[in-house]
Length: 291
Picture 1 (cartoon, one colour):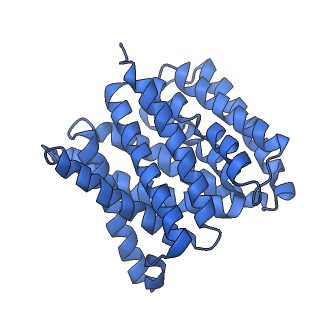
Picture 2 (cartoon, rainbow, N blue to C red):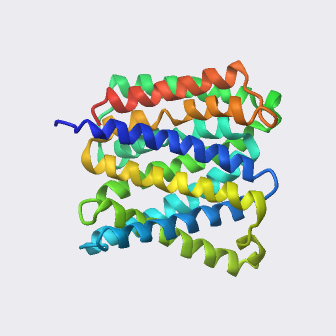
């Protein structure tokens, strides 16, 4: 299958934007909570995406199946996945969280093997082993970086949610355009998360001011643009092309952390090596397996 040249460009831009969002989230979490950050993130995305839908001629046809897939994607990926992502960035740091959240293609691959009967190949085994080594290096960095290794379950849960949602979005694109699909996805998340906050008596968490609001808004713009570009790239190209390039995001997080988070995060050799190994493992899984 011939992949349009624009597909790798979109995936790489999405990776850089996702990394930038991670940095802004970390900055906002200095003086605000994760729940507030998630709320601003999804609200900015919902407003921005529906404005874009209106400016591009309306939503167009949406099949019932596509509607259901994107609604489910909003609940699993955008609510649960992003919430665990914010909590992970808050408790284990931006660099470690970004690297482990990047495990989502591994989750997708394992689900495909278990649920769809796909065969285990040498690249899958090799990629998995490389990822395991990278994850062990990150967990060994916990004591030095000031977090408990058991908190690594937060980014791993986020990765699990994102791994599941990638399949749902791909299925949804068969019956809806990428822009309206992403808008449905994020709007579902905004409504569900607001309902959760109200039901649990956390109305104050829906309000943000000052620098945290600016940081979370910037993160929301970057995050949701990244998601949209990824969905567009998946609609035009293959998973094996888009996933490895988008999976390079943790490398950009490490680079940006060095310049913008030097006063709050320490980059050790183990963190850098673990991040590189996880990105390499994702490349082996996605690019060589022909998935």
